Length: 401
Image (cartoon, rainbow, N blue to C red; front, side, top):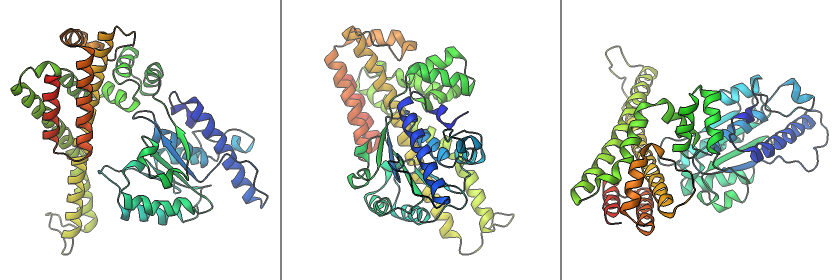
């Protein structure tokens, strides 16, 4: 299956990337034959993929990386690179290609040290592939210092190096960096397209796929998780009941605490799955004895791992909270649609009674104020306001709205 098939609802972007991959192949072929480079090439050394959460930014970047490394014989006969089955495509997609570095972070930010390591990697010639490709999935998490380090590499790239940066919007990337990248903007995929790929690729039952695609409004990753994770469905169901529990101050404070506790439990659960394995692997690499005794001089390394795991748990908790707030926003969006008599398709049809009840109890103006309160909570969390304080302020505003 061609690498472009996973770009759901992104036909225009797929066409642009396929054209660039074809020109990139021509550039490498011309260089190998010591021939002049083709004119008017659509290939460039730095790309910025933007789009809302769930649009498939990193999927597009990975597909492009695979197409750049494609070694299918059909490519040499004029076919579009990105067959999906050759060694270059396969290893790029699964993350084992020697010349494709895929960088993501499970922390709150990407610092200067990590970025300098990337820049050093980018200066190297391809080890065996056609291009040296750096996919930075969380370019919006670069600190200001890290962004300045990256700028130099993007300004003066090595001849066969390609940077693929991903961020929610162009405003999330330093102006000096984005001005040196070719911008590709992805859209939220249509609900029907998301449901279709869940059925075809993941084997989800059609009715379940349609329900989760509608509930997540086209967010592919969240739709897949809802369809396959019962705990995710339970957490979402609890969030959708929150507006009915903020009738008084006590209810507001209790609902806020439970939302924080749920996010913390989610972070703890994910941490337990990863932290133990990481710790045991590091201990083995450092030469721990059978009884768990560590060699002298390794305490600093273990402490560094513990600090990293703690930061990751903080990031996971924030992400879990943000997901809950997104679901809550979607609920009030449906309420507003009912109040305005809109023909907009509702996302949360499984709680139709709750939607009707909230619509009758308020006005469009009060619903908009509640949506603004949720947005203010998300902004407060981005500014590192204490999560419980931010959520309590939100639940009180939901009551007063």
